[in-house]
Image (tube, rainbow over all chains, first blue to last red; front, side, top):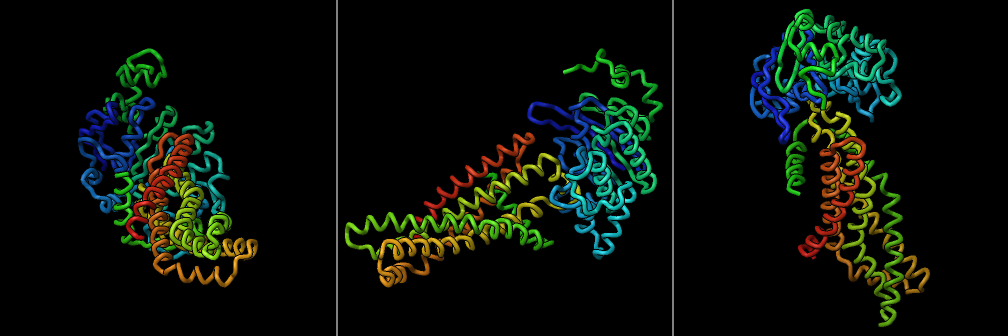
Length: 248
Length: 238
């Protein structure tokens, strides 16, 4: 269970989060939607302790992430996996070494066992036999799948996805959506997904939260969000340029 | 500059915490040290040669050509060996440190390290700093040696200075402390260039343009800091 309570964050004079409250259920997929530059990635980085709030609490299984030192943060981060927007694979390592990285860092496994886990995770994302390739040899979709294989290498409890389908063609978008759903089910993960892609949002989300002007203005099941009469949500889902959301 | 000192303190803290990343340290030692040998040999050799050439014309006015060897050896071991070596390593390896870590920063690879509970200071910066502190003195020894060899070649081989006098004056004038202090300087310069390179890379913002800016700033700041600190180290040591 992840809870954000009255979280405030500013960068200089720019107030990004202004008293945000959000509960993320265990074993479900929560999708966070909102306009570009609205603080969704900042919110995600608060959950994993990459950014500390100016005020408020971020509770992961009851532990306040904002009060932990480096060593304690590292311990709790072992519960997490994260798929970055551009996958953030290490350029200097092969695909196999990338997926093996968290295992070599934290799991006391023999080299043979590491190779087996790497091969298993790559198979789970539909990419068998690419262990020796370099990230620069992969397409955008393949990079994201390798990123997902790395994120689930240590069998984390929580996986964060930062715009997993941005920049992909519709077929690859659907493939990634399937992958997220399959992985969530088979590993019983708590997933937090940031996405703009409306089709993906309703396909993968058990719960959807709308972030607007630094706070979550609505959260609920996909059907509840679809049925919402909130003008901000209506405008966002309709993709209309007219409404309360100002175009900057 | 204060932030670089804070980074240094942080590096010291992480240096003595397990795991000891020997593979990464050796990889950086190979990159900073072994791959810089050619450029350091070339720089040291021609510096020694030009010092002998210039020195010869000066000393000839006092009929003291035999002092050329000692001048080259003292100049190389005390000053030019450590300074030129560290400037060349700054240009080659310090810039690469800033560019590599900077690229990792803007492509979220540094964040990925944090997320996978691997501290980037321990994983990226500590091995580079250790490599800088160990390998720049190692390169300086090579630079000192080839500089003196270059001076010998020009002085004895081309300008017909007596080989015995050339060598005798070197052994008479150059003390072990000259070499040792030069190597201490080199270690300090290795620390400066690796810390500055890593710091600039680690604080890169703004995509490809930011990486370019960080790289340039790293070379300029490290070079200036090396030259300024050289004065103070010299004042303290000699």
